[in-house]
Length: 119
Image 1 (cartoon, one colour):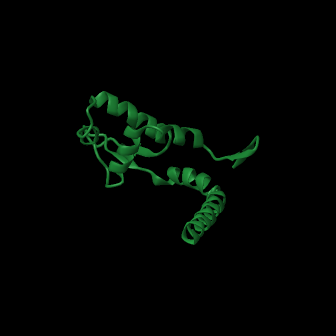
Image 2: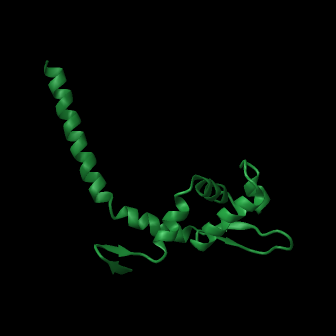
């Protein structure tokens, strides 16, 4: 992990978040969580062409979130969850912040409830 400015940068984190930013790519990853699939199998539920789905797969592959093999005429894609772990770890760095904010919100809500019940 290298430090850039105020943050520590994990390898390829920008590409991972860019790939995850698109809802179609997130849906593709959800599908691949159930097991490998061909481009045609992945494209079936989408209202888009097979070449458009292939472009999404290339983005996911460049980010390291999937890998593709050549199996005769098929190029099945499969999830590579290890790279997604880098995004999860980066987000986990903020869990203390989120926890503190939720604790403060709980305190405010409890105080408001007590105030309402005392009226």
